Image (cartoon, rainbow, N blue to C red; front, side, top):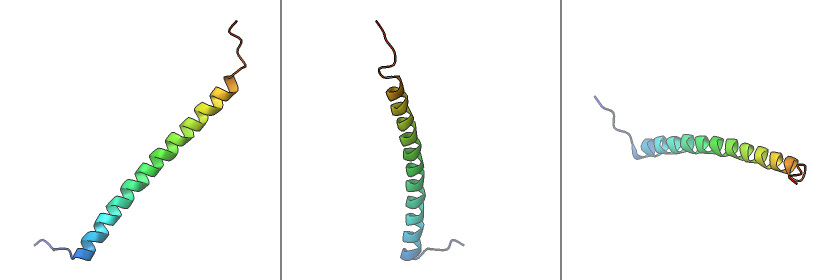
Length: 53
């Protein structure tokens, strides 16, 4: 037999799912932020240090 959820239980379940989705998105954004910071540091390190002429 299928147990029906109360509106509050359903809301809690939906909020937990949304929370997990946002946590994953935050992890992805933090990873991308770290990558971009590294790219910026690399660019600054090499900027002006190479003489192409």
